[in-house]
Image (cartoon, rainbow, N blue to C red):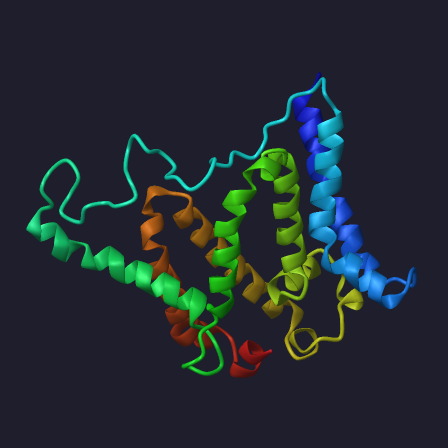
Length: 251
């Protein structure tokens, strides 16, 4: 039995089924309420169907989701619920308390950029995070059900989330324009008001910065990612205006 092949089928099947149900919401089949219901619950429907298929395939092993039984720490032999701020095995050095300020500021910047970017400064974008965190905690009690979900199915959902999030992102649209003749370019401001080669130059600049962020995140220096994010603000605010016109940047 080919575990790798079955895992690939489960992942691809979950992705395409969830994507199809998302498109089905705007189709002409079934009444509007039924279409919206299927489209809104397309992801859990896809997970259920593919997990059911895996359940009936008895002769091939697939890795399942590892869920702890009840409320417990990940590794009870390594730590408990409470971690002493004074150190576990040795006394916590005084100098490290002050040195920890530097990485703490970087983490603060990362969390601030993730949750506080809104139109009004007093509005927090993390309001829904409380609800999602609560439901994630309750999901631990669903261990008898979640343990039957293959990891390949979850990978298919992650792929679906990544692909669908690309739609509407201007950078992704301009990357596609790199492979498209100018006569087929859409009627968008960044196409009609900016020369093609300068639009591609800006796209390449963004790709280089994106690759740099990915490299930093994939190395032990990932703690410096917030600092690199701040440098992108400096790049956009002071360096790019020297290369591109103001109207080009606004497009």
